[in-house]
Image 1 (cartoon, rainbow, N blue to C red):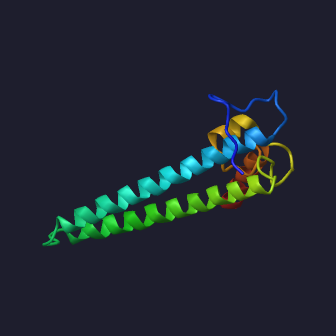
Image 2: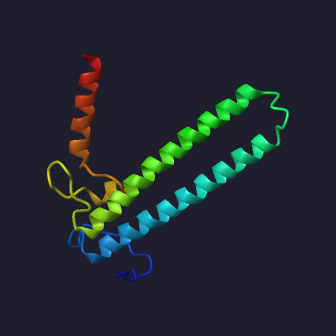
Image 3: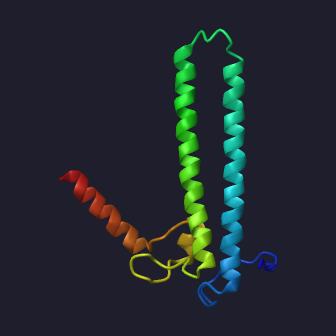
Length: 138
């Protein structure tokens, strides 16, 4: 059930929070980001495979190992990010997207615009980071 967004549409605080237009806007933004990540991931893997084929003598095995470690880290990062994007899309479908998991308050549109996978309001996120720092310092 996809809807067409008006050309140049941007969510604003003057509208009802997470109305169907805003939900569609963020869904399209998330789907586009996911596609870009998949494309980027495929390009990264293709170029790393080409590089390893262009070194048949494996003169520098350490470099090949480093490249492989980088490839695995990159794949892992993409996988985690795509899982978060899928989770955000699921929240849109369940009408829970855009609300802080901790307080239930709406997450600022500016924050969602910058980080569409955000699950916490800025305040809740800062609290979490302070708690993390406290734990690390103990």
